[in-house]
Amino acid sequence: DVKVTQSSRYLVKRTGEKVFLECVQDMDHENMFWYRQDPGLGLRLIYFSYDVKMKEKGDIPEGYSVSREKKERFSLILESASTNQTSMYLCASSLRNEQYFGPGTRLTVT
Amino acid sequence: GNSVTQMEGPVTLSEEAFLTINCTYTATGYPSLFWYVQYPGEGLQLLLKATKADDKGSNKGFEATYRKETTSFHLEKGSVQVSDSAVYFCASGYNNDMRFGAGTRLTVKP
Image 1 (cartoon, rainbow over the protein chains, first blue to last red):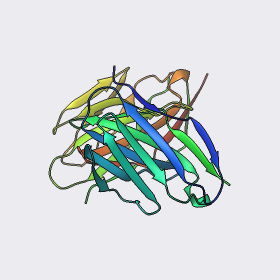
Image 2 (spheres, each protein chain N blue to C red; image 1 turned 120 degrees about the vertical axis):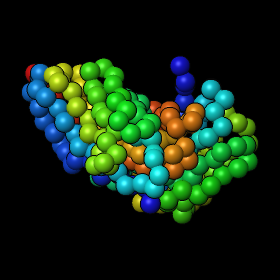
Image 3 (cartoon, rainbow over the protein chains, first blue to last red; image 1 turned 180 degrees about the horizontal axis):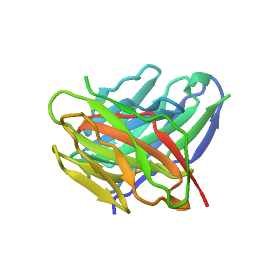
Image 4 (spheres, chains in turn purple, yellow; image 1 turned 45 degrees about the vertical axis):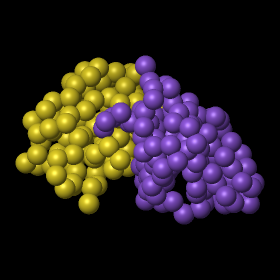
């Protein structure tokens, strides 16, 4: 089975802090994604990566950056957390068209 | 562009009732279509998929048929169980361009 793990299930940070969310997949997938999930809005793509050190902006990249130094690991960085970044963050990796999701990180910014 | 519209919830049914959750998509070309399920506190899991017109995806008693003429991929189950209570997401797209609906929360009461 494909396994996608995320470093934290719950995280509480203060406004202005730098926040790192880590995601690791164990199936050698080339593509990895970061989404945020908000009620009534579904999933919105923040960034995706199609190879090591390669990244593309999604629909809502503002306030976020990403890093992919190794194939299995994709990090989402909030440079200066703000309260409107309180959300559920989901990481996924994909093989062809199927995406496999991690359990999510619920981030609260106070 | 690529987008998905799915039936708003919440949906509340009694056990053994028939379920339909409507989903329509707009896309250029012929996207793959998916239904994902999210149980409380978890990430999304692939429930079923269809990759071309008239394909029927099925899993755990759920079915959906790729209807190109109506650009739809409605989810159905003949007899729901309490354990089916979850949020269901319809998705459409290609490998790096996947669009998700807003999600439909289903509650099944005994």
